[in-house]
Length: 506
Image (cartoon, rainbow, N blue to C red; front, side, top):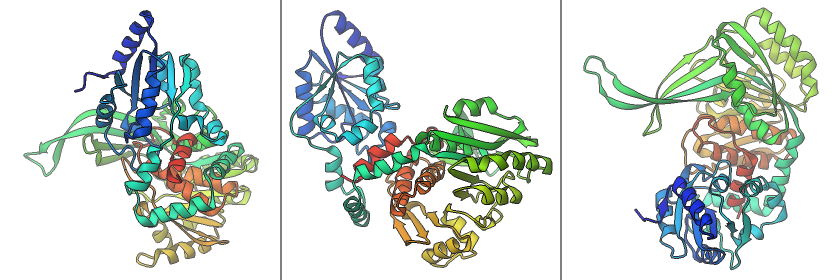
């Protein structure tokens, strides 16, 4: 291993020692995925500003700035940048939240490339959240000069990240809309007031390693290693929505038996208000998945829930609460996971009162064939996957275009999007017809939670009357980021989305 490469703790100690010696430290932060003349010039000019230059390399898990990024593993990227003579030390750093390493390393100077200085004001203003870390670190910012060369542009143009069909789609989209127009559209959703109602779910990942086949039974024995717990279902949808909208109100159902309320409240974003109802005949829904830690494959799942419809007295409490609430909000989102909370009477009330109604109806192992979007009669925006659309249409083998169009008309939706995994998404609008959008994900870590992020962002875009081709594009972009996140470990912030879109359309 190159002796320039240090842990972040070692770098912190080195910087403290150098400061005591009166030496000036300079830090550059980046992915350093493709080493090109622009990178080398930046590092040379950065080194000229001080005595010691530290290159902090963003870890794989926090690189979500474009398709197939990073191209190279974090270890290789660190070795590559360490081989440059101007660099004295290299360390791998977390970048969530962004620029967090500045707060702990505390260099004298933070060196930014010319592309940051030349970044249009519209993007700079939106990405201003990064500047807070710089202020806290108390370091001076220096912009290096020289010719700007974009690693993202090189990757997009020469490394064939996407198939030609997808690249042609992105080229057409970039001719029709520029990055500033798309960001402005998404930013306009901030002032929406949103009511979210649906099933809250606790997702547990119990990480294991396989030990071998049992001598007595036909099963593979696994050894427990650790666990991670996530706020999923409607909790996750609320967190995604609260990332882009300021005013979010959540209505959901917990169980008196093991409520997990303290955990849930700790995970909800601070701008989410909430109303919890409690069923006395079951726990808060828990989906416990056993996962092979090294392959990241799910082995087995156990659900803790009462899947029966809620009792009449509880339904009446919910209806009484909902009646004055529904018309207070610009958008009502229903996340119907089919676990007994959303009854027919609740649906009819929501349909009659909501100004704009967005619905996601999920088919899962507990309700296949029984939880169909066709139970809704008046919906504005719908998001389902292909299996859910085919089940609702009772059409297993027909052309998906016909399924989408017929289902949209059947439930009288204004716009319906069917997500199709690696095939992207297919929408149908009563106004504009079919809208095909290719998949934008090139790396999948975990699919669980991606649909929640897709629904949250697309519903808000629909409520602000954003063009339907942009709604689908934003949904697929958000989904591409979400599948790189384990379950619902974090919500997709709009800033990450903007960076991803910027990378796509360069």
